[in-house]
Each structure stands twice: as structure tokens, then as C-alpha cells.
Length: 253
Image (tube, rainbow, N blue to C red):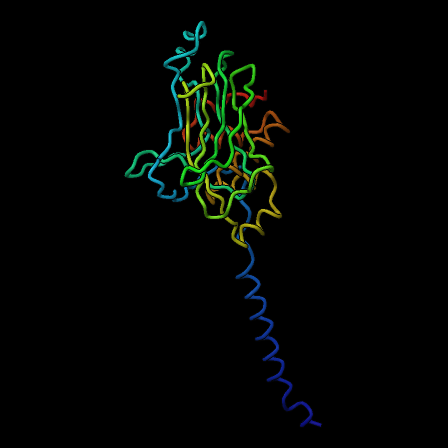
């Protein structure tokens, strides 16, 4: 009977080797572990596109409108874009990535009833994509603006130039303005897999670590809306040096 088992051992060894290789391949392709929500939020600035126009993150309250001028002048920040900045040879670049076709932009606006506002989005060549008047809230705070689905979605890998302008009268030039750049990028398969199983707090950290600012901040805003004790929003703003408005309320018109 022995000849029946002559090749049993090599076949078993071969099967074990194949299984080991399969398991090793699965381990190598599995996503990294999800971030610890008790760990500090780290934002990694992506490399900005070379547009030749760095942008402007803040406009200090050095002037105002009519009787409210003194109130505006006393506010150290009349208008602030809640966006990252980084140094370049051309100056301080205002730039953030997103995965969204229709992203959300965030701004801090000091209340002044005399002001009107406009948001503008252009392509890199300055061609207008979207322009709209913005209803301002009745109190100072952080305001969101989402690009509507009535305009073409952002194209992947293409930089867009945005402006937020405040006017004492609805004529040019604006009395206050900030501007910067946004670019839509696709997620890696690994990050996509991580986000699918992550909690909202973990998603904030995953987006921030990968440089997707707009998605990280909007997710943190949702967390704050659901729980006023959530710290992700303020921590994320502090991570890019916006301590002065981290505790300001999120306001709506």
C-alpha cells in the first residue's frame, strides 16, 4: 500500500506554501489601521499648483461701512478664509484639496449689517465658472458656501481660483476680499477602503493626514453640529494656525 502515499508529503507542502503565499498577499494588500480618535489631528499640506497667484487668506478690519466703520475697525479680523496656507517663492499660497465634485468653502465673517457679499469661482485662466451673491448671517461667525449642482462639477487635477468679496456698496472694487485655490483629486484605493469603515472622527483624521482640507473641515462641522462638545472642528482649525476663530460659532443666514 505504500506506493499510494509516495507523493502525499510533497503535495501537502505545496498546498501549505500556496496558502501561505495567499495569506501573505492578503496581509500586504490590507489597509493600514484606522487612526486613534484620541490622537491629535495632523494636517499634511499638499503641494499646491504653480498658478502664479498665491492668494490672500485674511483681510483685517481696517475700514468699514458708514456708521459701522468703528465697529469694523475694532475687529482684528473682518474676513478670513478657513483654508490652509504655505510658503512658496511667490508668497503665502492659499490652497486646499478636495474629493468633492461640488465642494464646500468656509469663511469667518465679522458681522456688519451694511455689507453685501459675493462668491466667485474661476478656472486657472480666469474664465468664470460660478458667481453668486451671498446672504450674510446676522452675527459674526463661520459661514459655509457649497458649490451648487447647477454648475459643472470640478474636474480632477485642475486648479480653480475662488474669491469671497465684501462690499459696502455692490460695486467694484470690493472693500474686503480673500482668495485662494482648490483642486479636486481622486482617492487612493487604500484610503477609499479606510474611509468606508471609519467613524466620522476617524474620517476627519484620514482626510487631514492626506491633505484633503475641504472634506476634513466639512466632516468636522457635521460632528460639531451633532455634538456641541466635539473638539474636531476647533482642533483642525488650530492645526493650520486659525486659533483666533476656532471657538467662533458656525452661523447661517
